[in-house]
Image 1 (cartoon, rainbow, N blue to C red):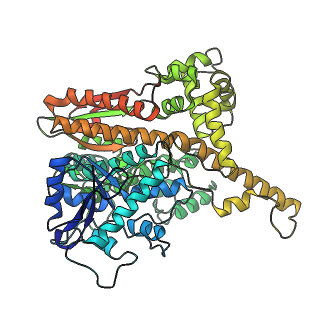
Image 2: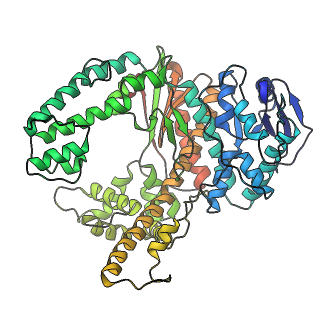
Image 3: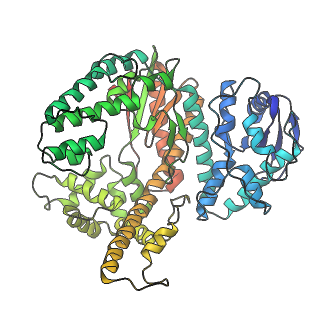
Length: 583
């Protein structure tokens, strides 16, 4: 069963039952308390909720203690469908989809959801998105969403269902993406257990006491002073200013073009180790220092804001909190509550295993049926090792080069070995690269589609097709080099896209199936996710059950995505009191 939702002002709204095709299966029901109505229907029927945007509506439900099992996120699914048609970046809201459906001017998407709603305006942003859409009359805002508002939701959903029926695998992608939106909202609501005291202790140990008045922490200031002394200049050097650093190196006869770490490491000067240490500590202070702690940790929980599908490959991003880049040194601040544990699970060698399942290369898939894929592949490289690099290391280099587009130095020889032993796997990513260089679109297993090349890319890589003056030999050589670089760059992008996007789908299905299993267990909660790693906060007595649920979900994700395959997706699991103890 599906139920369409339209939110209105003052906490009201409207509901309507739909069949699986999206057609109305009952009358419009106007409700004065939308939260209570959704809670009642969830308990009675556990339908798939059809609503404009999980990110805009679900947090309010979570704040009221209401959780739902399934939904269809119209905004996310519209984005997937637009992408499949090569129309990335077009507005994807219900208002925009409704306008396209009726040949009306397409409005821009609304700004991101507000972090918090004023009391009494629980669903105002949702109501505004709907009631101000095409065809709405000026001032036509009622206390509760009515037929006009719900009509857009129902019509857009039915059109999406029609389009999805023509695309094999897309229904699973839409369901997984929508489930991911539920998970993302719940992760932000529940939060990762976080000790502000431990975090402060780490910062104090590394940087010195918390500074006041915008001053540098004591350790950073000491390093800044030593950097100036190392250059021996009368005027202090500001290590936060790349221009001053470049000028300082030039003054001592060491001109450099960048202050990036890999450039500085090639210079023999006493200021270099000090600068590298300063950059590392300054990055910690800026990205995850005391200001971060004040902003993102409350009530003993770190509550980031995830963006589902925030990267074109389908990987998540964050709009705040930097959850995808927690420094290892701060993981000791992530600690379970008394009597509880953190179950930390990460997928081993996920993307290479995904490639094995995608390509259907029997020899490669047989290797991916092992616990250590690189070790299983290493047999192909025995006898070719040079220097101190092991056969396993060479197998890893070759496989990563195939997926990410490496093609110089040692990688060329290793890729030749890989191609001869596992031709189907090699040809799979090569075909994606060649498609990208032609300007074609490539897709994931379920149909997530890469963006098309820009008009500038097409102009750059199409030599001699346009009118204009004939370029000089010098200009022609310059154009050729630049065009070749552009072609290789897009080829590398599409080569990896087919693998990374499919890996992101596997991770989404893992989240969805694990969320379902955890709901059956009761108290355990998903509290953290990044790419191929999840953390569950659970009572100690259920930790082993959670670990079993993780393994079962990984197996189910592989089966749902690839069908029958010998490839396995093992999960490394640690049951710990602190995230720092997991690895």
